[in-house]
Image (cartoon, rainbow, N blue to C red):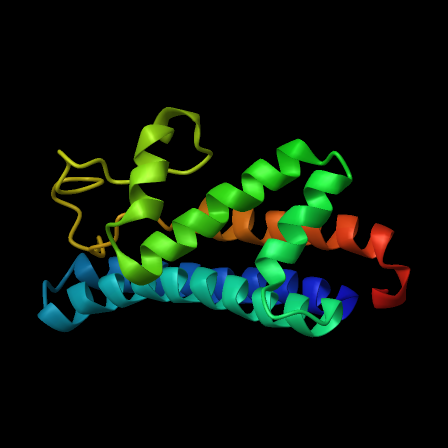
Length: 174
């Protein structure tokens, strides 16, 4: 699991940098052309961030299941966090788990749980009465969670923090 957390951090940094460069290049081209393909490129860049976040978290779940020898890695990780008194880390993990579920499945119980605590979240969700995060932003992807660079970095940070606690308890996973 230690190798995974290092790789996921590097992968996220690499991908975000590549997306930043692509975004800058596309915005520069938009100064002289308003072609649909350029607007679609901006949207694709935003969608790629959501795909990255969901992928990071999904692969983390597989690593947890394999490393902990269980069928539900997230439930096992939450139990370990609770048993170790890592309440803040457990809450951040729970919130991120809900956010990733919302990205994958849309409205439902996870979305309702996030709406109930929207003001306390370290990321932004689209509230029931909102149609956009930023009206007029042609690059916005239709998701209920705003997936920006900070959200992707938050995913990596939470994965690292959860992994650190698990390695402390299960030294054999180092």
